[in-house]
Image 1 (cartoon, chains in turn purple, orange):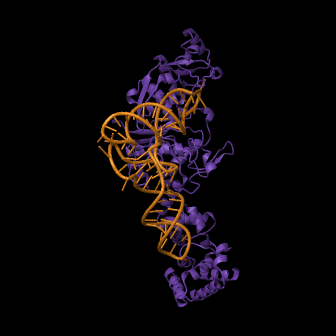
Image 2 (tube, rainbow, N blue to C red):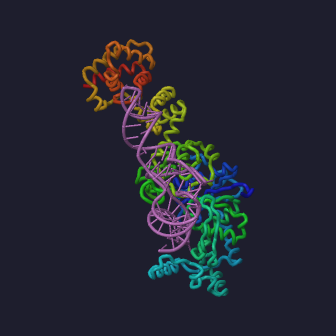
Image 3 (cartoon, rainbow, N blue to C red):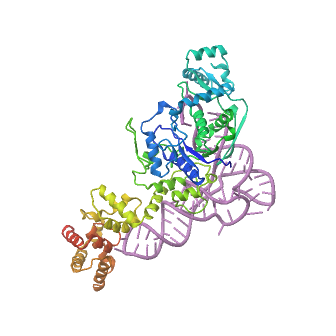
Length: 509
RNA sequence: GGCCCCUUCGUCUAUCGGCUAGGACGCCAGGUUUUCAUCCUGGAAAGAGGAGUUCGAUUCUCCUAGGGGCUGCCA
């Protein structure tokens, strides 16, 4: 490995919200950078002005921040290699395209989009589905290879629209070593003369990405597998630009696949299958499109990140719960898998549950109190913590914690129908009445005290727990199941508990 | 269609020529629990197929099949 400083970039295009596959790419870049003591850079690839979506760039920045993987440098984060938006670097690219023309590795092409369309249609009709602008077809097109120099200069002087295409040699094997895949090799006969510079004066991704990576001194290009087919083209560009010695190392990541059926995870899968595919909720300002986000669905960013890290990578040990720091220590590109990873929503929920349980009681209490406040329930931190301790084993999300705790906040407005039918009878009614009498005489209404009192009642009357417990629970909480009744009573307090018992005696049949 | 990449339990994965193929999620059963949840124990569940290399292949090579990606003046 070279001794150059590690600098990696995440280079999304602001054409919409960043989906979880993109977040994972960003995460792997971040982890690698942190582990190597390098820098993680955010570059916005907005060379296609027709696909600009307002708010998308901010969404990307907000998403990275929420995940805790903020770039060290880049759009929105400052740095010495800016600007970090390709549209603002527009003026830089032409010189490199010109350089390629001068050294014979690129040429002007004057074919209009309509021309190309027509040729492709004709080729298709003739049974060839994939017409390419390449070393054989370029000789019958309008470009600086077929037109006289005079003609070319005239067209340029007249301001005729043109693009600049790379000129590929025929039958040349292009090889490079990918960190996750090993040697990859493609013959130029199977590649085409890609457009490097568009007629609107903007570079295409291919040119911009090489120029910027070089200028920004990027050491490793870590990106999705969908870029693998164009990697050889990029290698050639480094070569033709004279930068091959400083060419970054490549690592092409496996794709995230949809949980059902085939294909890569797409933005519509979430709504279809009932889980978010985006980190944050997205409301498209231009139409009514709305996509749910992990944040809004109550996921902890640590859980989301932990889950994502394991989709395509694992540390080789049996540890699965990792903090961000832990991940960056354990991470290695060599242990990234080659095959696509199918997203598993159950596993994601499990991760969230693990993180919920790992919170301290007071953290959980605070989160529960916050959640309750959203629903106009004011709750002391002390009480919230007590409830959280009791309820956390049955929650995946904070909102579960809140919803399952409803009976603490308000008296039963109804009673569980099944439990009423099965457990509420004249005996149950008598027990509740007797217990109420006993409890009313208790000075100490702590969990232990209530339990002791309750158990002495059972003992004195030679009753089993099952004879009295369910009716008691039903009376106080309206439910047929839940955590320890003694703890519940203690949290509710003596007055409230007694009043609820009264209420039940009045309302239940 | 062409090119490239990939292929271990349902899913995420471990194994870097010699294992009863391990773990996690989910699922099932039993136990603990007044109930539910938790927790504990156990269970079902896999190296696509075919050749070759080798004393020995999940592991290396090739072929086939299957899956995925790319195939735009999109990234």
